[in-house]
Each structure stands twice: as structure tokens, then as C-alpha cells.
Length: 275
Image 1 (cartoon, one colour):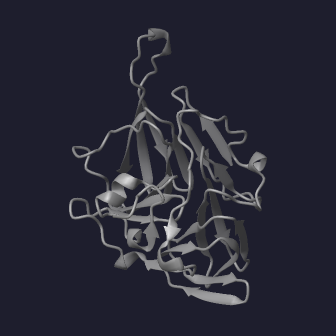
Image 2 (image 1 turned 180 degrees about the vertical axis):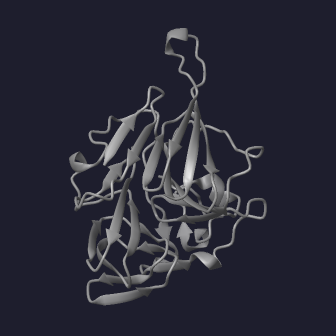
């Protein structure tokens, strides 16, 4: 496992598959853990909901005395508490949460993480509509992309949201999407395929603080942490399947308002006053 801090403030975390240690990284407001499971169970404990991604193999979730079957290639939102995960065949499970009672942040790949005052806190969690508390299961094949971009699927939990990006072959270099965020950190987790992360630090009045553009190669099992104000876009390169995930906490309210988030109707935003 390794962590590379770039001069522009971004970090590239690589989850080395050779290690048997817990492989997780911490962002400003979330934790991401990468599991390679081969006949063993992964145990997760969080006071908040967790998002789990099963890229290929399905499996089972055990929550107390309840066992839930998970199909192949699915996203799952699990309720707070302790969850045990097993796969039907060897494969990968990715776990995202804003709180993990079972992990020591100082054991993260990129520990210690210095607080960035520009990143807003998660704040009050969204509330499940109707008092629902069960597991939410979303087969990837059934998630609908927005009408303008067939590559992306959107999902949220009570405290975070993800964009799952899927496409075959190289991304069109004439249709990239450089942009920046003012008050939250983005993590881009590469799951399958090879990428170039393009990063540009805006010029300020102090020329000694200017930074060169970066065109950073990254492969599977790597995660780029992108601080506020850093202009970024990611280009899938080479043949084959490309699968990556953008991670945000708190949930992206702008995406929810556009109607893109698949399970937004299952939540009540604490900042929205009912009509």
C-alpha cells in the first residue's frame, strides 16, 4: 500500500493487494475500505449507513440474526450497526462510510490526514422516509443513468453519495469534463481499467504558489483524493472495461435536485423545509 501527496494537494492512494492488512483510506469526511474476499468474511461497524459495492460477485450480508442475499454486480446501502459480508465466489467488496467505529484512522494508508478547513462537515444526516431501516439493494443493470450521460449512475446514503462511472474502451479525449469544487473533497476510486487524472491548480496572486499541471497515471485499486478548488477530470485510457467511483460526503444536493440520484426519494433532506 502506498500514499503519494502531490504538490497541488491531491493524494493518490494505492491499495496493494499483496498485503493482508486492512486496506482503507481516510478522506476529510469519509472512509473507503477495499476488501479482496476469498472464503473469509469482512466485518464492518458504523454508527451511520454504509454503502457497499459488489462489482462482480454477489454474496450475503449478516445483520444480527438477519441474513440478506446480494446479487452479482450490485450497490447496497446497509443500516447503521455491525454488518458481516461474505461472497459466493472470490471477489471484491468496497465499503464507504462517514464513520467506522471498528477502524483506527491512524492505521489508514494515508494517515495522518490533516484537516482542510475549506471542506464543509457532513452535518445532520438525511433521514430515511417513512422510518425505513432495512437494507437497500440496487442491481447495477437496473440503475438508470441521466438522459445526458449514459456512463454514470448515482446513489446516496444518509451521509454521502457516489457516482458510479461505467464505460468500455477509452474515454473520448474531446469530451472531458474539467471542473472544480469550492467546499467539498472528491475521491475518485479506480476499480477496473487504466486512467489519467488531469489536475490543474488555479493561479492566485502569489506566483510562488503556482503549480504545474499534472497528468497522473493510475490503475485499478487506487483512489485519488481531490481537494477543493483543484481543477480535475479523469480520462479512461486503453481498451477494456472502465469502472470507477466518485465519492462525496455529505450527499450531493445538486445531483439530487436534478433528479439523478436513484434512491433520493427514500430520504428526507434535513435542510429542506416541507411545503
